[in-house]
Image 1 (cartoon, rainbow, N blue to C red):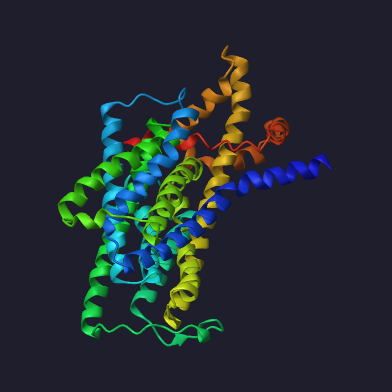
Image 2: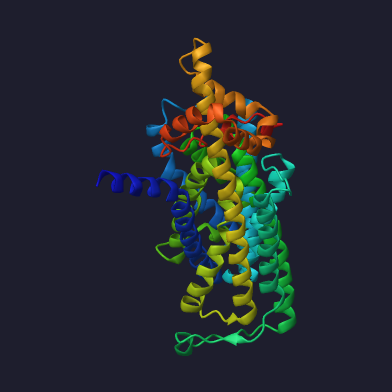
Amino acid sequence: MEGKVGCFGNFIQRAKPYIAMISLQFGYAGMNIITKVSLNRGMSHYVLVVYRHAFATAAIAPFALVLERKVRPKITFPIFMQLFVLGLLGPVIDQNFYYAGLKFTSPTFSCAMSNMLPAMTFVMAVLCRMEKLDMKKVRCQAKFVGTIVTVAGAMLMTLYKGQVINFFWTDHIHTLNSSAPDAAADKDWLKGSILLIIATLAWASFFILQAVTLRRYTAQLSLTSLVCFLGTLQSIAVTFVMEHRPSAWTIGWDMNLLAAAYAGIVSSGIAYYVQGLVMQKRGPVFVTAFSPLMMIIVAIMGSFILAEKIYLGGILGAVLIVMGLYSVLWGKYKEYKEKEEEVIQEIVKGSSCGNHHHHHHSVDICRMETVREDVVESNDNDDIEMQNKNSTTTSTSHALTISVPLPQPPTIALPREDPKSLN
């Protein structure tokens, strides 16, 4: 009975990042639908960004003050500059451009364009040496091909419409025909597409910089609340410049308030924090690889609530995107398992290390040393083969390896401790 409970606990522990990211996609999908309704009713997206991040700051700052009062690092000038740029990339540039693009297009199209995010983040992570691309390894090939397939699916949704697919619930929904001419609609659609691409690029940059900042400023709640607070101040300045109508700031007990509160608390406050936690365990590419799921959820919700038309090209693109998503995730999972095996081997070496050194924490020291070694990663598989071949060391190695408890994920601290990725 205890074994079953232990196995279930293990499963929950391993599934936490997946559950967290899938739940976030549902939260983002709801934000897209509610925001589109609010923007259609005439709310300024500049004002919406200000209120959104003001709500996010108010929601998460009290928890940061109470829970992290003892572990909060000091803010140095370089860290402050990183926080300032994070506020500029996420709340200001990404959110304003995304909302402007959403206003000119539709929620499903906006989500489809934002599926460029895994590809952009993967390329930027490789350029910043946060991801190592070794095309000889199958897991790297899977991540590369998955990224290409995901982008191809998003492009298919954008460029090919095909015939309208009628579901059983759409027969009872009467769509409102737009009175705008087709030429003007196409021009707005193109403008919206460009805005969404810029927003996605800013969002990918935000993920990369957030991963770097979390290594130096490890208090996630404080980081989230500071980014939201700085983003609010920057957004107020942008709104004063861009929005000259005083009436734009008025907000009542209506859809505008719901859009700002929901987006602020769920999509900014909770999302930034959960992404930071998952990013420390699995890295930025794992976090962004789940974004295609949001598009599928939005397409279904949009056909229900906003009477959006779903086209054949959209369904084919969604299938491609899901295939690419799982290819990237498979590559990330294999990489995670390799790192786990590497740390277990170092724990084995650490036990022998402790016999020759008088340090009590030799396992941690050995683990940190291996992270800093350039040769370890390329020779991982050779080490495993050598352990299997050497009959003299096999019995002790296997006994120790089996006795190491796997429930505690040993790779949690690895992304923060890797000094190479900061170069």
